Image 1: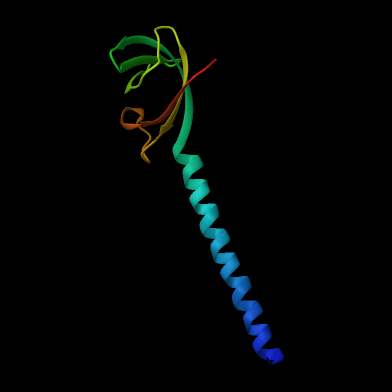
Image 2 (image 1 turned 30 degrees about the vertical axis):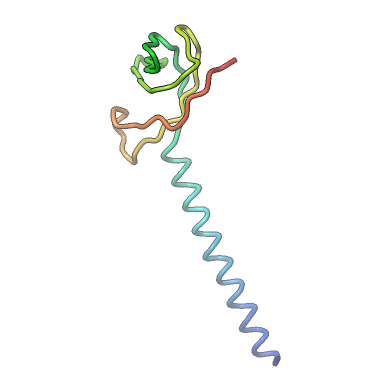
Length: 97
């Protein structure tokens, strides 16, 4: 392998690493900007339908087992890329212990 060929290979490798790093940053940044956490209190449990109210008064419903009235829960939510909370989607619910 010639010195010129080795230099080209190094430059190509470095450029590929830069492009991959930028893409990963964009993916992580998008995730962080479009997901958030809210704490809520379970108000009602009907079979597997759970109704909870967060600290801002928003009412959330989801299906799940093992939840009881007055449980404090953590909701991981996705914004769907909008500012309107009404279309946000619950991604995960955890009971705070």
